[in-house]
Length: 531
Image (tube, rainbow, N blue to C red; front, side):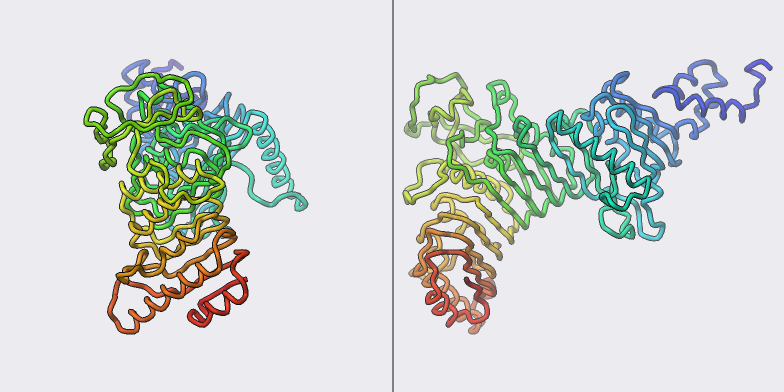
């Protein structure tokens, strides 16, 4: 029988079988003749099977093909088959489909990663629309990625064979978000060697994002991380764990600075073990941020602490001799604010970096607060204290968030930064600091001043843990005077915006004695925990 005499139904079946061969098969078939074009135009079932790889098409074209197939399949369920040479290709190729879980039936991955996912096995029909809640990205070296892939293969085989002696954690890229499947939420885990460019990805609608960097990989460049965040506009929780490796920033990078990233829904931010704290916090706009966790940021070695992306009227290489200086204020060196995002603080000084700052190879502008700490209190980690304090200033200045919780675990600031924070974080209710070498003058700032003004007026919970330089006397005097003041105002109903202390913990502070604890307990009673 000649081809033109075949019934349409049979041709559709043949075409459907052919679509399993290559990415553009359905499109190619429609170009053969007018009849075949009419069949493909009116047969959305031909676009239900999507074949992609990382060799025949660029990521940009692969994303266009995926979105074209998603539209032409007219809401029908679809299956995805991808073949990858590099594990770094997985997220770019899958990104167009992540917002269509309700239609996604299966995903078969071949090549550098072998996996088959049948999404119907995850869903509970009566528990709402399926959604990918969280994306976990692990940045690993090539050897680590291969080892992890082998572990996943072993887990998958054990699960298929029902081997109860091995891990029962579901293997693979997609897993249930909770132990119960009733929520219809999944989280996705990918192992990459670098952060993908946003130009290779479709927008990601995850609510939670966690990025962890291996100590065996080159440091994630802060500008790459910030650009990646631009395609995650719906984030509510973001955690980044670095490797405490100095980022490499070149003059070419500075000529193309990262954007100010707007994350209007972000409520919780965690930065852990990174030397890019200042750069990251200086480029985030988070007007809804309620919780900030700064963890393991203290280091006792030198590294560049300035923000190299601050604008200057002109940039030129500087003398590589070890010079540290601040030029006098002058109109011709004052920088203008960046036009992207909310305005930055006015820049009035130029900093000639120390030898360690010369890694940037360029002049770096100073922001208000970059000068030396006039309190001259001792610190074991002066460089990281400087970077953390200035990053926090920039974030709060730009975003004015309703920050309620600040936890600093082995993350410190200069005394002047604590003073700035306490006078600006009016909404803060919970402050927890661990392993700080803050001076007595910092904790004394929490007591009412001579005019009975209180900093952090809404503070309810204060935890001082392993703060070895604080004296027991300073803690007792500051907390006792604050408690008396706030309790008195509340009892007299004179200050609706001032909260009493409800929980105070002094733990592992060697200079805080049992006698200090008993003295403070006379005022706080059961609100005090100490040992």
